[in-house]
Length: 430
Image (cartoon, rainbow, N blue to C red; front, side, top):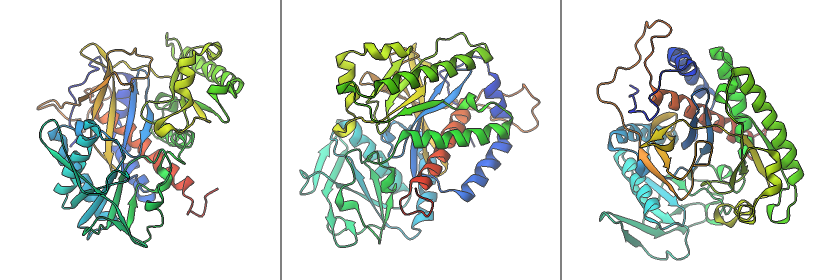
């Protein structure tokens, strides 16, 4: 049962939304067959932009933070999905070791507490093992609301990783490995480590993900008889870029200009009266770092020193040497008259909820993932009518939660393609 949202975008249903809603049986069967062939990431979150005429994922996180932003109504969905995910991996599991990143801010700790709560209700004992050298004994942190989070030092034996008097079947990383893979989590042949190490930002590249997503969107577009551009952000990429030394900027200019030209042609085809723009992002980045918006290739020559510095490094101080140039997509969502974008959360192959990222200091054509952003949980309407079989074309009611879930699952499927193609232990790995 898919609930309706109290949606931020409450305008009339558009052609794209109508096509998706009226194809629900076809879509669900297609996903079901895909998951028979491919393994979904253990968990993921997807940033979605809804321009009205176009609905796309703009980022896919395989180590999602922010689980505390899910409402209590969403927790049963997350618990059921967690049960399904664990049963596939280690049905007899009793203990789960959760490894966070080294951040100690209240938001990250609330996220960890929520994950503990989800897996506890799924039937697991969950404890937190810290990678930080500063955690050399059990350390309890009290949150503002009085709840407590306890971090413990990891204990590594020859083939297993755990805590003192705690031997887990499964280890779940909530650390995106931006700084690389710590040796303590390598070569764990007797335990399940999720997500796999090659999903971390130390090796993962956005261009591989969106190349896989492009393939998924083409197949999905053919299924529904629609232009895949309506759900796919076009992109180019550049390697060997150094913003601090002005190196590689010619590649950036030429690829930006070419992509802007493609967007203009698509806008003309669909009669869209908007100014095209692109998002230039660190290919290995996350957390909203290493991102800038460009509306003209000539703007690259006028990048300020502050922007150059911001683009030169990303999370964990990693330098930016490769970038992806992604088609910019407007967001027409609004919460309290502030620009917003939905973030969809998934576990295994199931959509379990999400939130709106709201930014009162950003425009509809800007990056919202900045320090000024806040999270507003997606709220469900009470007693809303779900899509009914037998509706005639044009009779569907808006249900953006389903739409966002479809786009989120397409991105999740692309992530499964991506991880299969980049798995160093796979036969087809190049």
